[in-house]
Image (tube, rainbow, N blue to C red):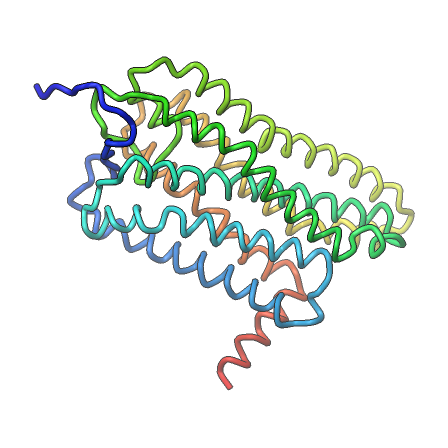
Length: 314
């Protein structure tokens, strides 16, 4: 058997993994992933372009949607190179610093997406609970401040988690179990005590994604109470219909995330490719589905996207 020496972090080359047991079919497996990436990149770029170029969409709700599309683009690009590199060229090598960079941006865009969904929940809360003050509460400058806060919050919370990996040494296999750098994967390969890393990582995720989910839930409790207090059934339906797209976006973000956690914790007997496929798709589902949901469920976005596409044809 090969032996591994203690290795300092800076000199490590990790080996990423495609789909275990299905290496012979990587080229074929890449086809649906290429389709998903193309859909995510084109869909979010189209929505972002429509919001920027159409003055009718220069409103708080659509500014937040543009933030969501930006984070989805970042999340897709963060994994695209390594995932397709493995499927097409069997390019599995990744240096430690490159691995840390990828891990940071995947986590950052995940936390930013969670924060944007929370901001969008606040937007819906203000629009339904206090519609007369909506424009004065969510001004352009305040939305810009929220956007900057989202970026700073994610950066401050995640930098210690990623930076602490530099103190680890590695003395066993350097094979990671995903096609991108996954924080728990890297820690499992270390022969250093990782308790501090575990605590900092858990704290970062609970205080961002975990806290956001609770606040989103509470905001919808208040929204539902407000909607039910409206006398007219037609007005109740109209008020709640403005939340449908956001509820869909929240569901497709949190359900895959929770599913991945359950599979890692309780699905140890499942074939390795099941873990890998779920881990790969969970990062792609929100970027692929968000543009579809908002284009189908939001009339203004649908009209703006069609207008952009027609102008391109001309």
